[in-house]
Image (cartoon, protein in one colour):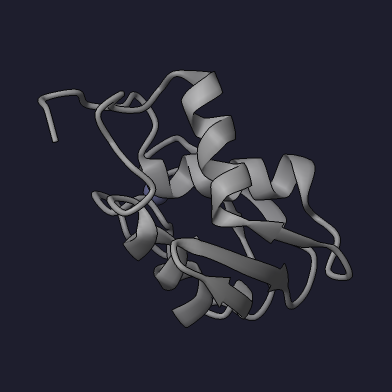
Length: 115
Ligand SMILES: [Zn+2]
């Protein structure tokens, strides 16, 4: 990984793409689709690979936002449990995206305030 620092933390970028394009609990999506969108948006270190961001997708499965329904090599298929909510974090001033059953903690890793 290089010295690229995204203006929005990757954790929030991932949640935003899911909120904007896959916010339907009956629909499934893959980490590849989300990662491609992040690359198109351009706020990402261009040297990152799908393997480098795997931990972020494991995190959203562990936190109760989504569940892993299938996996084939590096591709992970996921489904939301419930629609995601958009919340403004007044501590870090980012719009953040949380599942109703997740802890009310800001997903910005440098914030972690209660929202
Ligand atoms: Zn925050």
